[in-house]
Amino acid sequence: MATLFKKQYTKPIPDGAHIIARTVKGESKQFAQWTDRRGKKRTAELTANGKRIKAEATTWTAKYRDGEGKVCEVATGCRQKDAANAVLADLLKRAEHVKSNILSAEQDRIADHAAVPITEHIESFLEYQRRKGTHPDRVQHYDTKLNETAATCHFRTLRDLSVDRLESWLGEQRTSERKMGAAVYNGYRESWLAFGNWCIGKRVNGKQTHFNGEKRLLTNPFDGMAKLDEESERRRRARALTDAELTRLLDAARRRPLEHAMTVYRGPNKGKLLAKVPDERKAKLIALGNERALIYKTAVLTGLRLNELRTLECRDLSLGDLGFIRLRHSNEKSRKGSTLPVRSDLVAELREWIADKQPGDRVFVVPDGLLRIMDRDLKAAGIPKKDADGCVVHVHALRHSFASHLSKAGVAPRIAQAAMRHSNIRLTMGTYTDERLLDTAEAIETLSMFRSAAIPNESGDSDDETEPRKLAPMLAPNSVQDSKNSQSESLSDQTDDDAENDADTKKPRKTLGLTGFLGMGDTELESVTSTMSTGTVHAQERVSNRVSRHFQRNSASPDVTFRRGLVTSKVT
Image (cartoon, rainbow, N blue to C red; front, side):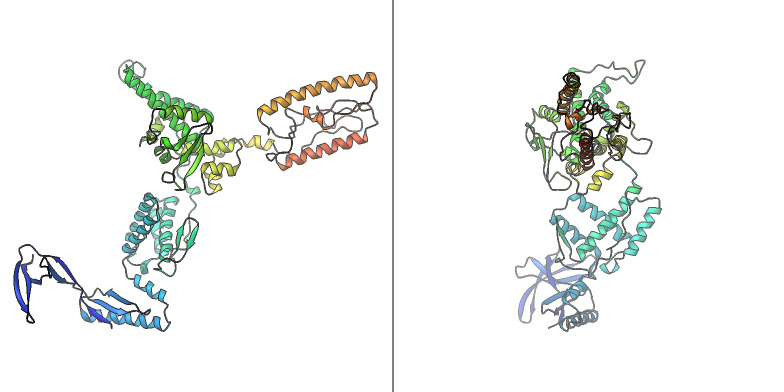
C-alpha cells in the first residue's frame, strides 16, 4: 500500500479574490481567483462552507507500512516525484530489514530521528525539563549552552554530534581572549552530557533512574568526557569572616545609612557629620540600617543563600521557644524543602522585626545591589575586600562563614553538612570551610599519644617533676565543670587534713583511690560518654590500672606520696 501524495490544507481567501463558478465532472463548484504578488493569476477551489480555499503542499509525502505493521506517513521533503520515490524505496527497505530481524524496531525508530534538525531535538529536551519541574534558571542554562555550541560546532543533526569537535572548541575558548574557566567548561560538558543521556532514553527523577524513554541515539557520544578540576582554577575564593570582623560588619551596616546622610561632602566641613536630617527620614534610615544588619546576621547564623533570604516570608518563620525557619521547596536551591533551627537571640530579633508585618509579607527587602552595598559596609568597618591570598568577601561568603564557624565550634562534620544542606560532605568540609579560622595548634595539643601521668618510683618520688598536660579535653559544659572544680578543691583539702590525723592517731584509713584524680590539672576526668574519643578513654583506663597496681605493691610501705596533685596521703 505504499503511495506518494501531496497533502491538502486550507487557508483564508486572499484579499481581492473574485468568486467564480465552474462545472467539474458534471458538478458545479466555486473557485476563487486572484493575482499574487508576482503578478500571476491564481485559482483555488473553495471549501464546502465557502469561507476558505483549498491548497496543496509543494512536497510529496510517503505513506507506507513499517516493519511493525503500523501505517506511517513520512514527509519526503522532495518536490520531484522521482526523488520522493527513492525516499519511499529506502523506507520500504528498512521495513523489510525489521521484518527479517536484520534491524531491530528500536534501531529503526532511531534512524527516523537521524535527519531531524538538532534544534528540534534541543527544543524537545528543554520541554522535557520544563515538564519535569526543573528550575527555569537551569532550563535557560541548558538552552544557552546547547544552542550556542550547536551553532559554533556545526551540529546540524544527531549524526553530527562529536565529543572531539566539542572538546576542540572548548579548548579554543580556554586559550582565546574569552579565557574560559574550568567551571564554565564543566557547564558546557554537563549540558551536552545531559542532552546525550536524554537522547538514549535515560530518565532521572530524584533517585529513580530508568532507560525506558524514547531513544534517539544508541549511545551517548559525550559519555566519558573529562571534567576539569574547578578547585584548582577557582578565580574567586570566598573568605570566611572572623568573630571580630562579623561584629564590626554588623555595626557598620547598622550605622552607615544614617551616617551617610549626615556626612558633609563639600566645603570646609567635608567629611563631618553635620548635615541636618529630618526626623522622619532619620527614623527610616535607622530602620534601614537595622534591617541590613539583621540580613547579615540571619545569613551568618542560618547559612541561607541570597535568593532564599529574598524570598523568605513571615509565615515561614516559627519564633516560639524553639525557633526555626521552614524553607518551602519552591524557594530552596535543591527544591526539597528544609527546616532550619534558629538561635535564641536571633529568634528574639526576628520576632520584633516582623511584629507589624502580615504572614504573606517578605521578611526582608533585599536590594538587587546588595553586593555593592556590602562592599561599602566592609570599607566602613575597616575589613579588606580581598586578603593577601586573593580570597574575597562577598554575600555568599557569609554562608562560608557559617560553615567555618560550625567547624571551629567543634560541630561534628555530619551535623555541619545537615546544617549547610549539602548532599556531599566534601563540599561542606572542603569548599565552604575556611581552614584558616580553625585552631589546628590547639587541636594537636589535645592528642593523647605518648602522654601518661607520672607514676611514683620505689622511693616514692615521681620520675618527672614537670606538670603534665590534661589527660582529657574539656568535654563537659561550663556549668558542670564549675561544680566539679569546687568539689575537687574540697576533696583536696580533706585529703591533707586526713593525712595529718592519720599520723597522729596511727589508725588505718581507706585511700581515696581514683577519687584523687579530681585534683588533676584544671579539669577532672569525665565519665565515659559518646563525645569522648577512644584514645582518651584508653588513656584513663591505663592510668587507673597503673595506680591500682601501685597501691597493691606498696600497701605495707609508709609515707607513699603521689605527686602532681593525684593523691597526697600516707598508706599504712
